[in-house]
Amino acid sequence: MENKCGTRISWRSKKKIRVKFLLFKKAFRKYLVFVPFYLLSSGFAFAIDITIFTLLRSSFGTNYSAFIAYIFGTITSFSILSIITKYRLNKKRFGLIIHLIIGIVTLIINLIVLNSIDYLFQMYNYHLYSNVLNRNNYYALITKIISSSIGFLWTSSMTGKFLFKNK
Image: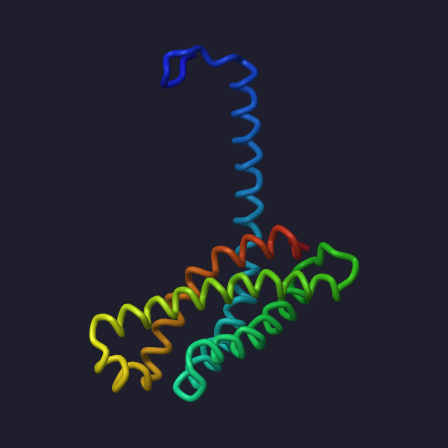
């Protein structure tokens, strides 16, 4: 067999590629088995998160509201996952710390997306943003749904990999 450059690929290279593919396939299967459990816990956490963010955004702004909502959402998610799945670590204290670290990266992803959306609307029409959207709970709700959807991929894969597995 030849690669793009026309040189032959050895059987060892083929075997390495096959092993990498099989490992990826196995990890992806484990992720797909874990996702339904994570969807349940993240659904409750998302409901808490989005409610708090939507209610606080017009008073505290995007960043403070997202941080406060993140804390309550993370505690909710960790608590539910502790009940419905098997815990990978011996001490829950370390697991909560790892869960918080994963959540902080998710919070950073959310803040980047939320602030980018705000920035785009400010650049498009500053008066519309400052007079209407910045004070509107529906705008907060929609932007939080968008940012949380993006952050979900990171959080679900890392939580399944490091903290919880099926019972």
